[in-house]
Image (cartoon, rainbow over all chains, first blue to last red; front, side, top):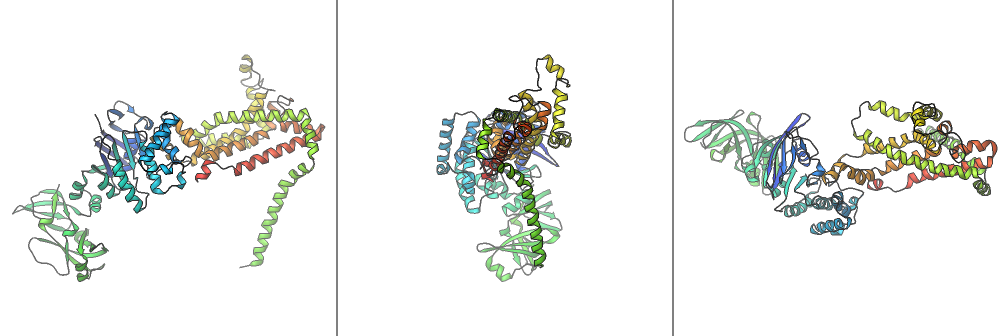
Length: 356
Length: 266
């Protein structure tokens, strides 16, 4: 079988990580989550640094872990390449010597190792850095060298631990674009761990969202954005998401009880559900608006953030919930919004997404 | 501000510093001033002196080899393993540094000496340690190896274990990672430890004379030769003393100035 297939359980102190993961060969899998969600632990499990309490892991037909059968392959026995957050280039070795390292470690002869390392550095456009010591590389250069080092031994599985996090914004864009091109290899399996939504957007074929050691959502980026199942993803996607209880009402609609609010949605649903409203669908008023198909919530402006041509307004709404609205700059000026302003927020029943 | 008090305090500190420096350096200076280059060259012709120098170099190198061979794994285990009873083990390892060297010599005698605990076993195997070059190396190692182990252990402990993991994630075995990553990155601590061990071994007297004896050309190292000559041939004693002084000084200066990979990285 080509690809990665695993289901691992690991106890990390108070946190229990449960990771069912399937990645077809040639695709990039992103583990998305806040710090402390268990992302790095997940990567350490895949790399072999941590021993799972239960489960199995197989990559391209090789069994890396099988707790029931007592199998655990050490990291060096796995065909893995890893790029760490801050590069972790060996400070006592030149850039080229760093890239040569994995080949020499696996017994490739000196001359051949140097040739193969140089070829990879050329491929990444960093051959001019060969003699530089890591202390004299910029963040972006160091990450490129680290990437060459991870790829030089042609691993089956490439593991990337927040590879963009330590870079400044501009470098990040450049490296991200380059990396996206490189990851497009039909044979390799890539698992990338990040808290940066853009990484998922650019790289991911499939995303798993981790929260407190559990996979809370799985899918492509558009799927996640449309129907977030956690406050974290909702925030990343810029969506308002509430958990509530739906009751059917006549006319193929439902009413969802969210905290103290009752929201009307133009679709059938019953029982516990998620309710999502895009901020651009929320309009703000100084006076209570009229109209039967509208949901109206009163709230108080907490924060206004100017964006290009628009303003993002965060409201403290009824029942202790938070609601985000995006209005045009003009209407923000007309409404004279500032922290403390009491407003009414409204959105149409047809603009609410209800899902389980 | 009390400028007078400040000046006074500064003066006191300066005076104390000057006295400490003088106390430590004047006797050494006197030693050097007590000799002339001619005397030194004459001293170097005496067989007592040349034999002692040869013996000291051979035995201290032997001590270094033995120390690294056993001390490096020991330091690693202490730094990275969960060792039960760690405080006791650490205290025991520091003991030879604290004990009077004569006590170390006696301890070795009652262990592997002719009448010691393992003396019979060794005699049965046809091995006699006392009054041999091996005994000198054992005595030196006993008192000086802890310096290396302590320094190396501190170096290993200070090294982020992430470096080994990085190496292993790139396909390096633990052994390869140790030699190619851990050792270069802890080189300053390892070299410093070796320097201290070598200096301590070079100056070793009490344990050596107690356990190995004082045979010229076999166990009479430089410090022993200085001690013996001080009564019979003061010129030879001073020659050896000055050479010891110069060697120790050179090692200490070298330790403080050699550029090392780990230093450049930091």
